[in-house]
Length: 103
Length: 223
Image 1 (cartoon, chains in turn brown, green):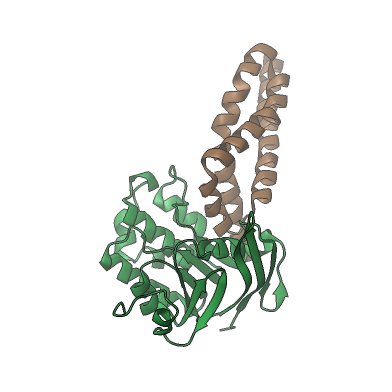
Image 2: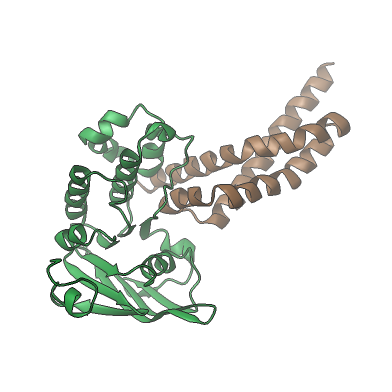
């Protein structure tokens, strides 16, 4: 039963992570064009993430209550969604290097 | 069923030099529906936010079942909160909001509600104010928390929906403790098992609703 509860928490974190993705990607696309995948990764994991969280703080504060009511604190949301970001760039980087090897 | 207790003790809050809350003590047990009444600016919403942990207090002790809970992350496991403003992300569908909030085995029962069933294929942004408010209330009353704080739940609800909300509150109070505040004092009085008046930052535990007149919250003839 606890496992199902944890699964619901993971899905909540994933929903939060998705809500930060659009802004983060938008911030990281120009660096990708000019600097390549390495710059994209560093911007995605730093500046892009900070901007997406900051915009949420300013414009969508009330949405946090949804996650609070499902037992997740702000710190947990930030921390776990950052970890999902790391996993996301790991997957993207792996795909890019795989394609480079093929070429 | 095990009875749980939420105790809020020694709450103090100042905004600049103005004392908003002073030495507030409140006890809520499973089965309680505490009606928190008070005039505008009396500190009702501030108190609920402090209990939930989203507003800082100069001093507070919150105990759940005798254990002091200092960290907000610990409080979130036991308490749910309905704010005055809508809180479900607009881009969610109703189905998504429900599946993220309600235990899988309770979802079918959740959709048996006629009103909820009629909106389950919609997105949050497509709901009317009343539909969204009712969904939010039902979501937090149906989740696993032991205590629920409702800040102006009747806001935007039609009289029929407000009545339905009171039925929902009564039904869920069997396994939760509920604290409710709203300016619709008649609805609050109808549903509450205990009444509390907030006045000048202090809490007054009332033995009878007539004290609302004696203490100046209501005028003669309003009850």
